[in-house]
Length: 247
Image (cartoon, rainbow, N blue to C red; front, top):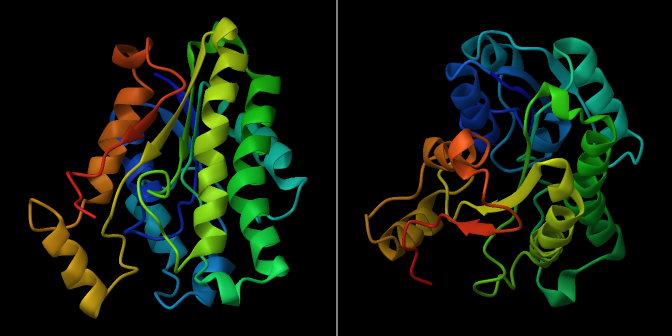
């Protein structure tokens, strides 16, 4: 049984909620975090956080704005205080942003980098600083998008910051493997978390060989493998779990 911190758990349809559900089901102790104001700003809107947590069995929850550089260390400390030394970190959180090259602003790029790239890096740093091998083998799973496989010109701030997450994975893995901590990155491909509708929903579904988007539960299954005993030899990898997505 592991002890895990899962970020990005603010909506029932999110990958973060699916990951938390999967880890809890296998007997892990889990702390979840979210930042509901981000969802409230987006077209898809927020969710009833109390209901989300209730569906998960009311695990410890921390509301955290990862744009704050102090937040990652504070979050890891709070998680450890709630469930003990952590063995697992799963960073599914993301700041979404659209914009082509002509629309990019420094402020939005900086915010995407702060939440997506810097947030993931500092969470890994804080996890490593507190990690105790006596608690069990460690695992970090970060999340990227598909920008390393194909262009994403309409959401540059998001895509560039997620590209940084994918790029840092190998170096972080090399840094931590001597302490028996694996670090991997998941690209879940087009995943039906409720953000897309209309034309986008239909176009992407036709580009998926199965005729449907990937599900959050499928991404969670990949995370469960990467954080379980069968993947201890896998580190520094980006797992492209796209379901055969044909760009």
